[in-house]
Image 1: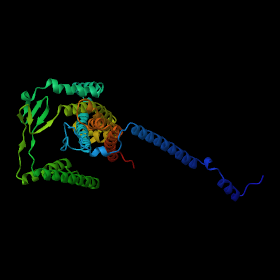
Image 2: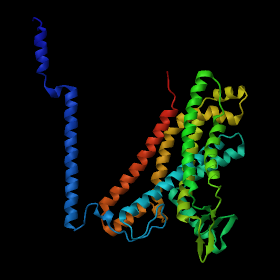
Image 3: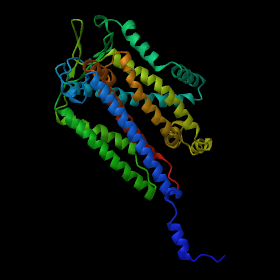
Image 4: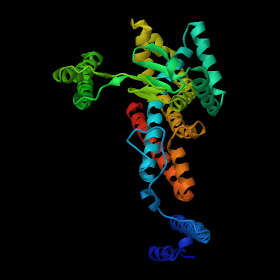
Length: 397
């Protein structure tokens, strides 16, 4: 049988059914899946709206502009019961953000110290760190919150008999009360100077790296950077006359007036989350350090570096590439576990949203807001950690 000419082969290929071509068939399957998902979403939404209308339950976001008529125990921004539900939810979100940011910073410091102590050559230090890790990892975080909450209310005295370890610091069953600087116009300029110092240190760091790569000469970046970060705000402080006024708390009646008060709920939540998560971070740090070859440490010691310098200059920079990915998960867990604050009465976003749902009856909108806020917190944390991971990863040539 004679071979077909090339033109006939091309015509036969052009007549091939589209469902026999993998690329077109994949587009067909994806389109069908999107249609099914759209139909499912339409069914769920329409069915929900029908049931809400049948039960005379209001829908929409208009409730955010209505008066909340309930107090929030702690607030980062001014708030009263006459404010709207929208502002109350903002207060709850800021409370959650405050716990998450302070908790992450404390967890990173404590977890790193315990992880390094776990690898110490000192038997007692190593065993104490191991005992801490085993204890904290195997006690549910909710029980730890209850424990610290009970400590404040049962073990600490009343405000009249408050513990007074330092001047301007009081510990009682109302929380921790401490002195803060009196408001002064210099403070905002000091903050601006600190921000300018951070920018200068960043630019200096880039210059130092480029200079070292070009000439091999070192530069005392740590000392100079610390001097910039401390010196610029100090110069602003001196320029405004060195204001030293303090807002010192004083006992007035049955409670303290002045200063700043951290409630037992906030401290219990912070301690529970930090101590629990730090145990997992410590194991991540230990694994990251052990992932660095022993030859690296031996080579660093052989050129005369001290053990502290070996850890800071050789081991930790390499271990970060192993530490950061699982560390991201623990930072996300800490943020999401902050929703357990409702169990001990801290007014985080979940607690405020639950109160809003109970008063307005708009559960769908309330739950949707809770999901959206925690999704935003988680995505922001993940984006920052992924950015830092890209900066520290090993780039192969």
